[in-house]
Length: 614
Image (cartoon, rainbow, N blue to C red; front, side):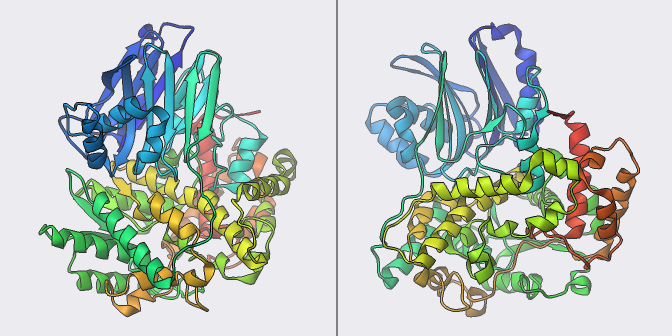
């Protein structure tokens, strides 16, 4: 994994603007701590920060090769899991290779097939190719948007980068945000509308899109999207296909020239990834799989069962690790780990985020990085197989909004009246919801219930999953750790999308088809364990610490929070205990302690990023 940034300008000679490019790639150092490279031509400046995963000697970037029409240069963030197969095909077509890197495979694939190379790629990626003779730029992002890519059109060119901070580092970009951007943060956040960069003039290239830029023309196109059709397979074949796809995906994602581990929570999804990884390593006669889990100090003392989390993860982690004979490391975090790193997680994300859910992942990733460079995680299984509560609760199914935003009224209750008029949160969220529904690929002759489940599935895959993928990428890459997500393999997502709901769920049992597909790999009690979310700390000390820090900020009359928040209402919330009067800021993931952390981040975000409201 890496960080990329670039600047195209057909009006100015960029050879005298090297310092601006350096300013753009410098904030991406954490994404690529192993090296850097730049190339500057009269109208193109490309920069790269490298994290070594494949071919340490041969994968340096920017990388240039001569094609039929001249010299092409690539900068690339990601991994191609099928690069070996692509290399063989390209070799048969007459393309030669001087390295073992997937970067050279990707560049040659573009030379061979142009944008038609994209459907051939299996991986997670964001890359740019500059055609020096044609003076054109090509940008592309993987299908599910696992790797980030933002851009800002200019009058005579474009700026782009792996993270918003890279674009903001350029002197031509004002740090302005209008009502729409603030609505993204305070009505939807930490979720974000696909394609939206929050800052005025900054956009996100959506997953499954590419961008073609030439003088006087900027055009984006979709090369991938979900397609609805009748599911052709019976129950037996469906189980086997899910199993086969997962096995093939994980065997490919274990490929690396550096140590690979898995993140293990004891839940179904991470246990499945770990089981298949351990099986693949055993077949290859490699050492035992290394697994890592995260937990919080005094969890047993402070944990209270809820409908979302009925029991602790730690005993299940131990059970799975013992069953699979993994070499396990348990990382235990305490409140200071979360509070001391809150602003680091803000700067990693560039936006206020998920509080301890973000910060714990950042610190956890740093601990993993001491032993490995690549980790496999279980994200996306709940999205594609329907594991979340909102797939099953009648109130959530019937709600005319995003299922995780059903209590927007409670959230808006702490906002200042003038700010509510400024961002119009109810209208904004409803508009984005209806916009998302308009995209749903319908299937005729479905029942009303099946149509609604398809809608909720689409909302979850395209609006909720990106929030988790963004979190995973930013927090892990801030530690120089690459996280791979096997359940985001597009073949599995495409297949699962059309599996009938009757196969995915049976009564109170969720993700049934996945559990059945994994029979024999894990103990039955693990296979059928109820979903448990990524843990946040229940320790009252975290609530008290966030409350104290937020009270200090509110004493500053110049804080932006006084323009955004209904302070008397917020103080009412703060006067209650850790578990009383919860405002669900972002579903079950963020209660009052996390709300306080979000607002602390918002205060520092406004000042640290020198934001100007439009």
